[in-house]
Image (cartoon, rainbow, N blue to C red):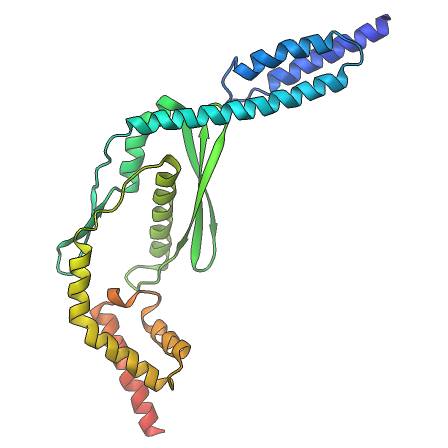
Length: 269
């Protein structure tokens, strides 16, 4: 082999080794199994003439092996983490209008504080990506393991229009809920809301308000000539997207006043 060819081969060997070393980023565990398996093969390929294609194929094989190894490491660590997750305390409550507890749940901050030590122990980190529209916000929780593998869970949360909060507060509430929901989904957490009291409270609300709700709906249907979309839109202008079971006394009063005003205009017309 001539000196020129030897020099070219040596330069190529140096470059290939630099590529191997540079490809190990901060999220890749050093001395991984794929590296130990493939590097000897690359050294053999580099010792032969016309080995560019062989080295390229080996580098691609190494990339695929590392991706597969990282994925296996991700699920192995996730499985071990899940066996150590303690019971997450439900530190927040939602109350009924009469002050009784409607249900309890684990807050986003409490979930994070519970997870922090285990995330560090098993090499996990997470981040969020968001995309907003007029009536909803999409939140994606991206979980990355130290070995390099990442997975994500997305949730599209509607932004409410309850009338109880400012628009920016409605947006913040939807964002927090979506972040909490996707984080729980990503790590397989079971923090189901304690809804034992909901059925009784719903029954009480419906018993008290059923006749009023029926009257409001039938009134709008009559005023809108039995046109369901028109009736719904007329109601929505008053209460927004809030479900009828959650209408406040003020919203119901506003609906009654709107009905009276519409009837008065019809009579005058």
